[in-house]
Image 1 (spheres, rainbow, N blue to C red):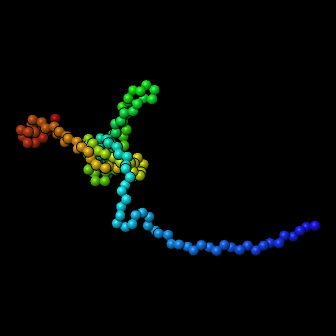
Image 2: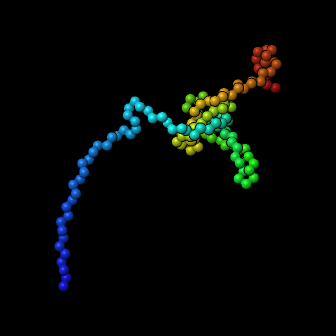
Image 3: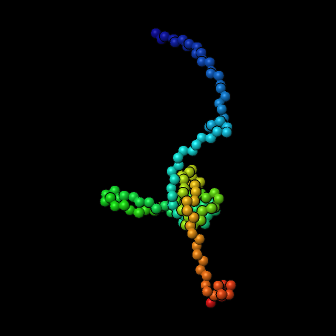
Length: 136
């Protein structure tokens, strides 16, 4: 004989009251959290032709895994220079940051040492007459 099952009526659980979530995340207004220690890199500016961009050459030494000899290596990094203040030959400090473009992942922290002014070749004729020599 087939037994018939009787369905029991389900009762729903009461929903919890919704609480408004704060929209602002972080410290209260007016307070700042100190930034974590950033990984900084020191290098020499090799190009400053781009607007707000510099190319920095970073030299480093690494030990050969098998022979133990220290090898000199270098890498080129593209960095963001907000004020266009770094010039070619300057020694600069960079820090990692979020990707700013396809190749830019660093930003300029400070200029450690300015490069000496590049000497301009002046001919004897220019000194004597006060004007540049004619092209020959």
